[in-house]
Length: 334
Ligand code: OGA
Ligand code: NI
Image 1 (cartoon, rainbow, N blue to C red):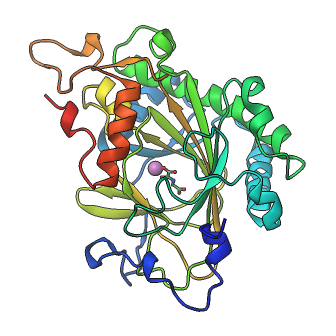
Image 2 (image 1 turned 60 degrees about the vertical axis):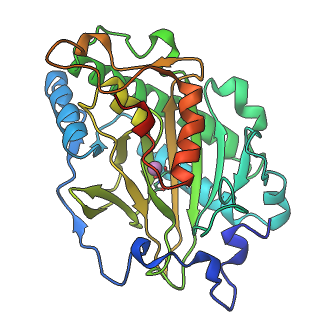
Image 3 (image 1 turned 120 degrees about the vertical axis):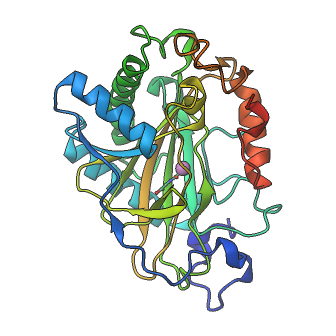
C-alpha cells in the first residue's frame, strides 16, 4: 500500500525514484494545448463519420468525439465516483490493493514496481467489465454508487466502442460484424487513473511514453489536461473538451488494418496544483484470437506488414518489450 503514489505524494522530500533520466523528462517547457487533433461529431452523416474516423486514425491515431450518445450526467457521475474512490480511507483502498498481476480487480501503481528503474506519478484501479454481470462482484464495494454507475457506464461505452469498430471496419472495406466474429472485440477492461498533484512536474511523468496494446481505447477525463500525443516527433498536449471522449487506436488495430491506422505513442504529464482523474476503457481481442492483417486489405500492391500471432502471446511480449524500452511491434513486423 505504501507504494501507492496517493499514499506518498505528501512526502516532505522528493523521492529520487521518481526522477526520470534527462532524455525522458518532460522539462520546464509549457506545452501549448494543441488544436490539430481532430474533433469528430458523431451526430453527422454515417458515411462522413467513417471517413473522418479513418482519416484521424491514419494521421494522428487519436481523436476526440462529441455527440457520442453517452449521457453527460453519467460521464460526470463516473468521474465523480472515480475521484471518490481515490479519496477513500486507506483501509478501504487496502481491500482492493494487490501486487499480483493475475488478480482481475486490483489497485496498484505499476506493473512491476520492484523491477522498474523509475516510478510514475499514477495509481490505477483496473478490472474487466464485460459482460458486467460476470465481473461486477469483483469490483470495489465502496464508494456505494460505484457498481451501479460503473455498470451502467460499461454498457454505454461498450455500445459506443462497437459503433466505432463498425465504422472503422466499414472504412477498411470489411463486411459488417468483422470485429464481432472470432471474439476480436470480446474483452473490455476499465482503468481508473489518479494522477495526484506533483511538486516537480518537470522531472517525472504520470505515465511514460507508450502505445496501447489493444484495439481501441475510450478515455473519459475532466477539465485537467495532461495527456500528450506524439506526432511527427512533437509532443502535442491534448485540450480537454467538455463532454467529449478521447479515442485512440491501439497496436492490435494497427496490425489488423495493416498499418493503415496507426497507434500513436502518448504519455501523461503531471501538474503542481490539481489532481487529474481519468477513466479509460480498453477493448481487446480475447487471448486465443488470431490477430493478423485483415485479408480484404491484403493484395499484391499491399502485402502484409505483420505476421499472424495469438493475442495472448502479443500481450506477453508487449509487456516485456515495453518494460525494456523496445518497440513492441518489431518482432511481428515482416
Ligand atoms: C492509458 C493512458 C491516459 C490518461 O491508461 O493507457 O494512456 O490520460 N491513459 O490517463
Ligand atoms: Ni495509453
